[in-house]
Image (cartoon, rainbow, N blue to C red; front, top):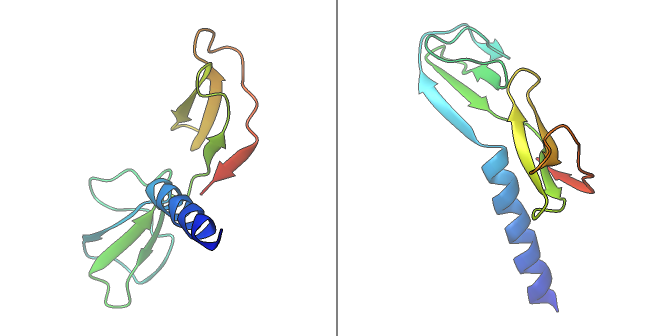
Length: 104
């Protein structure tokens, strides 16, 4: 039974890690949190921080991802304007689907 919980915890971490993905890029910046002027990168849906040396920015997508919904009838669509996922009917995108759990 304990191994079941270990597998479950690892699976949730993998899913959460995929949706809360991070990256780092070398660039000149002012040290501090939520740096939002990175050349060549849209930071609208990112949380970014310039490191203490001022030579790299680390950014993460910290957007909750729908985890429990009817995947046969519904699809998750990312709304970049609002930085969120909308879960809608696959055959009728004007109708929302209920989501019982989110990750991220």
